[in-house]
Length: 335
Ligand code: AMP
Ligand code: MG
Image 1 (cartoon, rainbow, N blue to C red):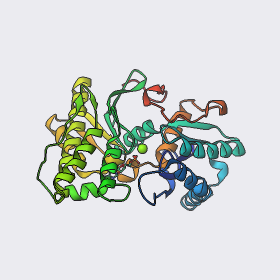
Image 2: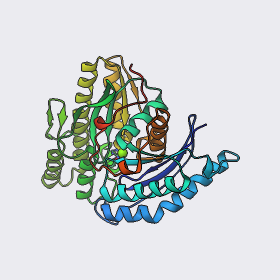
Image 3: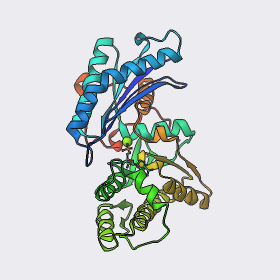
C-alpha cells in the first residue's frame, strides 16, 4: 500500500489528508474566515501557518485510528498544491511540505490544483474520459484530455464565476462565501430580469454580470431574490452552453463537474438536463470533494508517484498562475 500525505492551501481552506490506493484514510481542515470583505491573501497565509501543525497532526491521528499500526513512517511521499492560487498561501504550505519531506526523507510532489479537482472527481465518480467543467472562486474552465494533457477548451476572460457570485453577495451585505447565500435567495424567485450574457467563442466573461446585478439592485432594491435568480440563470446558462459545445466538438458524452461552485443545485440541474438531452452522462462528486480538499492533492500525488514523477526541491517553487495544460499527464493511458 502506498500512502501519500496531501497538503492543500491555495486560498482560504487549509486541508491535510492521507490517501492510499483504495481510500481516503483521513482528512482534516481548518478554514480561514475573513472578518469582513473577501479573502485577504496575507491573512489567509497567516491562518495556514498558525494551523498547519494542528491540521497535519489531526490527519495523522485520524489515520492511526482508522488503520491499526499506521505511523508517520508509512507515508511514502508529501504532495502539495503548487498552484494556481494565492502566492502567500501557496508559499506557506509549500514550505511546510518541503520541511516534512526533508525530515521524513521521502519525495516531494508538487501538484496542479485544478488537475487534482479533475482526478479526484474521476476517481470518486468512475468517469473515464469526461469533458470537465471546473468552476471555483478564481477559475472557470472547460477542459478535456487529449494527447497527454488536459487541454483548456474554454475559460473565463476575467473573473471566476465564484468570485463573481462572492462580489455580488458582498455588495448585498452577505458574508463570504456568497455562492450558497445567492443560491438560497435565487431559489425563492422565478422572475427573470435582463442580464448581460457574454460568451465569446468558447470563452466567457462574468465581470459585466456582477456590475449589471449591482445596478439592478440599485434600480429595484426590493427585488433581491429576482436579481439573484437572474444572475444564476444567466451565468449558469453561459457555462452550460460552452460545456455542451465542448462535448459536441470532442464527440464526448461524459461530463464531470468540479470545483466549489459545483455544489450549486441549479447549476447541477442545468448540466444534468443538457447531458440527458444528448444521451450523455453527468457526473458530480460529493460536496466534500468539490470544494478544495487535501484528499485530491494526495490522490493526484499518488497517481504521479506511481507514474514515476516527483518534484526535486529546486523545482518546488510555487506557481500562482499554474495552468493545467502546462502539466504533462504521465498517469493516464491514451483513451
Ligand atoms: P473553491 O474555490 O473551489 O474552494 O470554491 C469556492 C467558491 O465556491 C466560492 O466562490 C463560493 O462562493 C462558491 N460556492 C460554494 N458553494 C456554492 C453554491 N452552493 N453555489 C454557488 N457557489 C458556491
Ligand atoms: Mg479549487
